[in-house]
Length: 223
Image 1 (cartoon, rainbow, N blue to C red):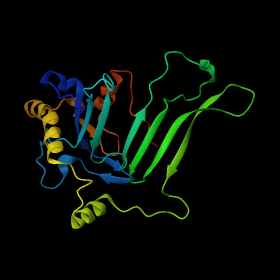
Image 2: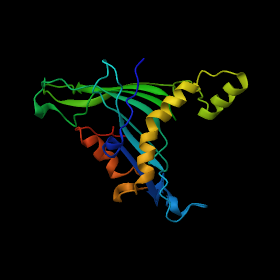
Image 3: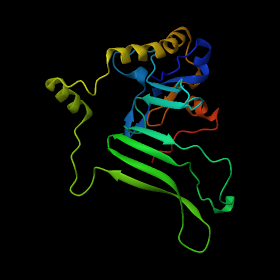
Image 4: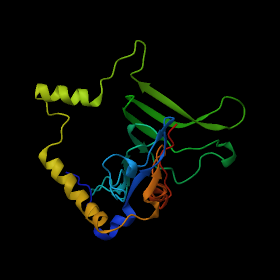
């Protein structure tokens, strides 16, 4: 069974980023900084954002990075899995034919809108070789629309039905803590750096972008 590689203490600084939101705007509404919230200490170092670079320790996924991020007071509420396909070692099309070129991705949208998106490049109709990003999309907002219950509604219903399918097993919980404890221990012993803060309504601290930039990657642009 494949395992997520645990962090060594010396790896935490280059594989994990934390943050805490400052004041800003979320969906047009003013949001005060975390430290200004009720019952929060003025100098609190509690993180409201985390980004991780992780690896799975087996032959199939050896060397393939998995990037995770989660946080509060971000630009919007969104849960998704984005799989980015590796680029081929040669360019099949001339550079001048590519307009806003983006990597091909398979996006599994979980919340708030469930669906699947395949993003790739397609030729613009016409005599010129001109490529642009396009999407093939499936979602549940069809005609007629299918109502989607809130995530907690589903979990509460499963509790009443005694259905544990969507819940983590004990060994999964223990494995998750085993992976995360080295990160939490390093964070507990070190003070947040200047890049710790991020503006409410953004997608997190600049350090999270730099985490991916180390390998020439970037977070998927979200409209």
